[in-house]
Image 1 (cartoon, rainbow, N blue to C red):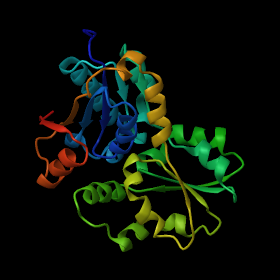
Image 2: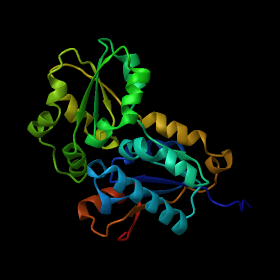
Image 3: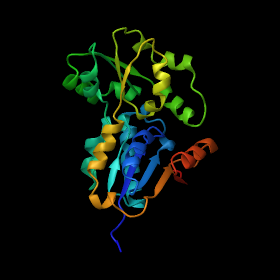
Image 4: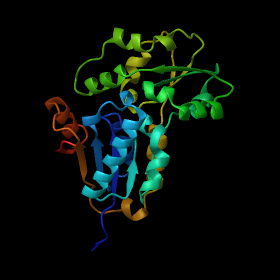
Length: 266
């Protein structure tokens, strides 16, 4: 009889955006216990000041690590990761996997060497993003486009509210104007849920690049073999830091992602 302790991975994002990475991870590690924390009490991260977000994330990670036992933390959020990975890694004993814009990949696959970075306004303005461009896309023209509304639209879509094509076009008009642009980095995990709608906003095929597979693969690589080989399916808990969740969202979380739902005000 295997009496070894269960292995748990914690995911933290401001809402449902990180479910894209969570799903990719879960499909490859079904035996691992998972905790997905949607920080709706502080949603959206992209509109918060750097100081406020840093303080919030430090407090949230501390609370979660005390209330739950987990062995690995995944931050499937570009806005948070580009700000505080180094700070968090110095303050905890468990490994952390972050999510950063896939600018390197975009620069490699673009044929025209004109790429877009579609992210929250916070991410597009970060020095971290600028450094990625300088390091990996120095031979490319990079067009940045920041949108907070697309985060909300992605949340609405998951709850059954059909996205407005006109509204999406308005959010990406900066990218639409550049006719040589052929590749766009989806540098917000929420945006991966809108890829079809975003493509429809352009009059030509666009290569959409995100970090979903890479982050999931990195997290999987850090798991011990014993965690992947646990005999029973892992538990799947969705924790919201706000007790206010819509019925539509709760239904999707239970039916599509098989989550048990916990709510608290933090």
